[in-house]
Length: 389
Ligand code: MN3
Image 1 (cartoon, rainbow, N blue to C red):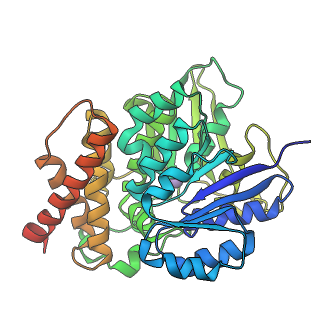
Image 2: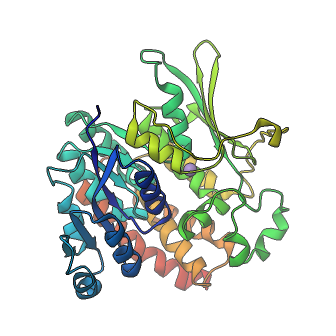
């Protein structure tokens, strides 16, 4: 008999958070919701809290506290507000697993605190490793915490590596759908609209990651994430465009053997695996039929069309604070594109400009990264205002 695992979902109203709740709902004998947090989506958080009755709910944006508190006043649920409450709650002794599913840089500090309190991390916030992979991996080692990837590519690699202890990885192949503009001519990229960029062919995700997929910055962030998760050098990480999104990623070993993890594109599987590892749990998710996919294609990524991917490799190779700079600039640039202030191609141009004008430093602390992140956000807004609008 396995003990029921208590799960804290940071960012429960986002796409990953909602799918995690579906996984938990399907396995009441395995999982229980202990904590739910959201940034601003108070109505959805109230709905989730009523359905799952967790110990605690937190809304990051404090102006929604009263609304949340009064909506849940009849239920035995503790209600808090503010980013610091989210950072603190992960130390709660009843939590077994912390799913970090918030968007962007905000995932960093709660993840650090969860590791310090020896919680198993189901990592869905890739920015945490992109920004501070060196510190996070060191902390995880020190506190003997296991970080289980939720991102589908990294879950695939994690699954391929299971049972391969002591067998070095020669290289990994990170698969990429290529996004909606894979077959567009370079000269047409200047005409890309927000509506076109928000339509992803295979995965349904939040708007930030959907735009990152369209620019392929998402794959760049994932390459950096993989570097830290699996202790690889940049030249051991190959991006392969695979439009069908059936092979979720692959590992090549020193004897040339390649293992792939495959399945339908459905985030519920990697979420569930991060919760049940090293076990697997039976479920009713749709099964793949190979006859529906007679052709699985693999192509080289186009670094000219997808300059963001090139920038990410540059940041990964340079290391230090450059990935942090790139990530902050990208968050601001994507938001500016979502606000229709800059064009699609200028997302990468803005990021490039921010990377070129920033001050490079090798070693940084978590506090340094927080400061760099804030400074780069300010500078990037200035770059957009002065040069790109
Ligand atoms: Mn992914």
